[in-house]
Length: 228
View 1 (cartoon, rainbow, N blue to C red):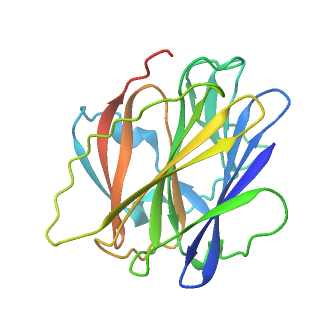
View 2: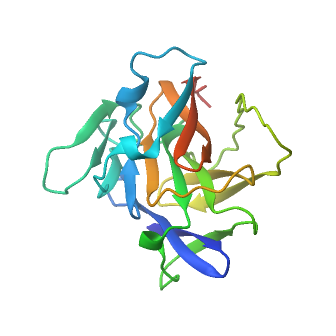
């Protein structure tokens, strides 16, 4: 089963990512035109630390896909499908999903390399406000028959009045549901030319708070998952 997510800005559509769950229950995310925010960046940081990352420092390696393996619990990013995995890590196994499984966060930008009109298959999209050109998506897998609550505690300092928009989409997959929690703001437009993906595991991770021109702002957090 698969779904494709788009964003729409000023009458143009942009493909953000595709989510697939196959017969082996693995979850694959295929970001469109995306570079990755390495978890190595947070290795020496503490919970609560703020990150200001220049987009140009992320490099130019385009992600082929991200995988979360149900049986082993391994997560990884691949730049080339035939090459060794980048940033392998171990998370919770989820052959039978009994809790929240964190997957990743993405900055989806209205950029030329992602421009694409929706095609066939299952898809949905987010319409961006007129003065916004990016959206932040946080993705989690949850059991099909349970409701969950998400608590965000981000420190955001504004130097001007802004409008913050929060939304959520619930996607039905083969053995689970995928929650796509979105945030966007008219604080400032961005001029980065790729989407950006960051993979999550339980424990120390980073939550992307916003983007300013060529900078990505994030906060180091302790991602705690309570068993349902």
